[in-house]
Every structure is written in C-alpha cells, then in structure tokens.
Length: 443
Image (cartoon, rainbow, N blue to C red):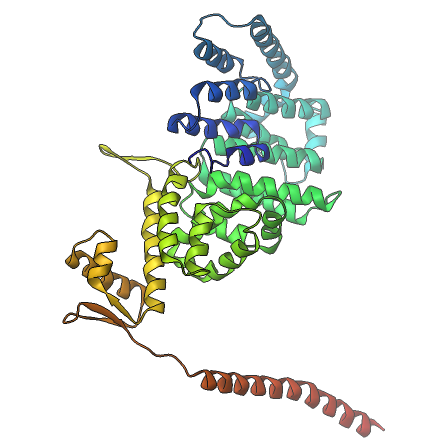
C-alpha cells in the first residue's frame, strides 16, 4: 500500500531536479522501493547536473565497483574547466562584491549601479551575465550557499525581468536545500508577489508558475513553525485553489492534512470538504477519504478504517513523515498530531448526532478502560465546548437537545430578510428623493 499512495512521481516533475534528491533519500530510507531503483533514479537526475563526484560515488555503490565509466571521468574534467572559466569571467565583479566598503556605493537604482560599475571599475554587462552563469553553475555543482549569495547579488544588478525571476527561483531552491526555512519563506512570498502581479505571455504560463510555487512550498510549510497556517492561506486563495483543481489535484492531500492538524483553522473545514467532494473523481487517498467518510457519509466505521490507512500514508510521505529524535526515541510529530485530531473529529461528530452515548461501548471500541474512556470524554467535552454531561449512574454521555424549531428558524430568517430589504430600499429611495427635492428647488 505504501507505494500505491506515493505521490513522488506526481510531485517530482514540478520540482527542480535538485529538490527531488531529498525525496529519493526519504524513499530509500523508508525502503518503499528497491534500493537499486532509487540509485538508478539518482544517477539519472545527476546526469543533468554538475555533481559528478556524487554521481561517481552512487555508481560505485550501485555496481559494487571502484571503477567508473570514462564518460564520467571526461565529464568531471569538463566541469572543472568550465568552472574555472566562469570564475575568471566573473572575478572582477565578485571581487567588488566582496568589498563591503565598495558595496555601500550601490543604490536601489539599478541603472545608476550599472553605469557606476562601468565607469569606475570597468565592470560591464558581460561580467554581470558571467555572475549569473557562475551562480547557476555553482548551484548545479551542489554549492547551494555560494549560489544563493551570488544570485542575491545578481538580482540587485539585473535589469532583465525574466532573468531576475529565474534567479529568484534559483535562490529559493538553494535556501530550501540548505533548510533555511525563514529565508526560504521570505523568498517564497517575494516570488508569489511577482507571479501574481506579472503580465505573463499566456494564462497557462501563469497557472504553471503557481503550480510550481505550491509544490516548492511544501518543503517550507511542513518545516516552518508557522507553515500549517501558511499552506492554508496560500492554497485556499481562489487563484491557487483553481490551479489545484485544474492540474494539481494531489495537493489536496497536503491541504487536508494541514487543516486536520491545525486546531485554530477549523473554520475552513467546510470549504475543504466541499472541494474534496468536487474533486473525488479526479483524486482521492485515505486522508481525503477519511474526511469524506466522516463529514459527508457519516460513516464512522469507514472513517476509523481510513484512519489506519492515513497513518501509513503519512509515515511514507516525504513531506509529512519527518522523523524527530527525542532521546532514545524516534517520533513522527505530524503523524501523532494527525491521529489525535482525527480521533477528536470522529467523536465530536459522533456526539453531535447521538443524544446518548454508552461509555463502556466507547471504551471497548477505543481499547480503553472505562476510567480512561470517561477521562477522554470529559476532556473532549471541555475542548470541543459540547453541551453535554456524563450520567455516572447509567454510564452514559447525554447530549443536550437545544434544537431550534424549524418553523421558528424560517420565521427568524424571514424577519432578517425583511429588515435587510427595508434597509436596502431606504438607502436607495432616500438619496433619490433628496435629489428630486434639490432639483425642484433649483427650478
């Protein structure tokens, strides 16, 4: 089942190839696929990068040999030569940027900076372009720290919007790979602002940029301390939700997970259920099916079965199954939070549609002692603000029935509607009458 619900093959095409490596490392660690398959996939990825030494190490591990193909040796010579060449071309500008006193001369006006660099230091467009190529080459070599610095400096001088956008994508990727989550979030927000405000050649290009942004954001949102709010805020924006429903349905897994584990964002649960229902024919997995069982079908047994599958999905998902070492123990925090909140969802819903709940039956279903089940219910009632009380004599949880009479509901709604209609008419009629009176007085 693990590989059945693995989304790596859907997520990877939307990522920079360097961002796919952490996913493969996770899959290899979890042993979801044959080790040989993972190593071959790594070599395929590396073939399009400059990380030749890493590719050689994997080749040796895969084929159990100390020898590597001649084309890898030739490729390494080529990479080293190209690196030296770009370094020489960019050297004047790099030397300038490494001097803090000289960098202070730069201004927000890029045209001024270019003219000043050219007149005073004989640094022109060729050196600025060389800095970009050098930064990009460093990134392809796996030197993400150097690449991030050079790309940041390049953007301060670049006057080409397309190239500047490309540099920002590279900077974001580098910060993600270095796990600088605060800086990565800043770059993500900067990139989003550009994507949303930029006039793209076609709506499809803008849609694709939004889909890329959401996929890259998964690294940040499931590692940053405020990420669970961030993913809800981003994915529920109309333009981004439309992108998910158009060509990235699998992202519903991550949105659904964030909603379940975020106690403060229960207000978006209804909207999420609506989207899951709309897209159930395009995408479903145990996490979306759990919510559908519970809130659409009120199928509690089905929800409990799906919850067991949800645990495996989370454990085997590279974004959700992050392991944390605590002393001698290894935990998966998001798995634990998901299960805790999902169980609360089940019992809150169960309590709202049943007037009387037998505690011993509940204890049996939850594999708890009677006292444990009673404490569980007390805590649930307090946290969920359910209007209920425990009858210790009969051993039941009794829900209060404060249902409003349907006739009273309709009457109250009509009163509100009449009042709104009256106020609307008043706001239209009074200005019209005043205008007519003013016109008559003028005549």
